[in-house]
Image 1 (spheres, rainbow, N blue to C red):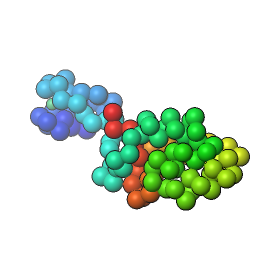
Image 2 (tube, protein in one colour):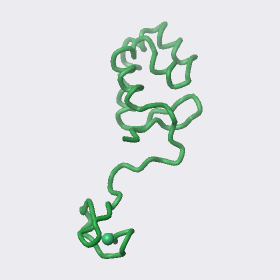
Image 3 (cartoon, rainbow, N blue to C red):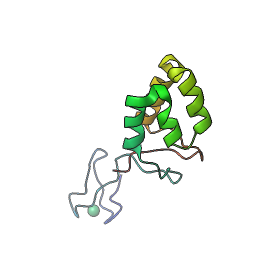
Image 4 (cartoon, rainbow, N blue to C red):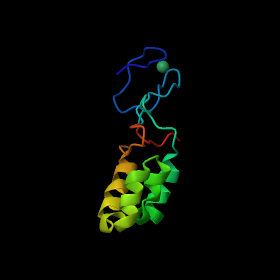
Length: 103
Ligand SMILES: [Zn+2]
């Protein structure tokens, strides 16, 4: 790959350009349809209160939240799946936007 700043050829695993010091953007990119919901908040809500669907209420999905509340997070399995999806950055909010870690 090549440096996006100065065009110098770089090793594929380089984290920054040795010539100009620009980062090579190898890290996870923030998708254009990223949600404005906070990723860490969603993660913590799911971890501590996932059985009550609180993370679904927070992310703008009250109907799913109520169902999770009534089923105790699908006996925990649903909440666990949501938790994994949040970690993977593939959990979506009520508008269909993906909630990702922007930090
Ligand atoms: Zn460079």
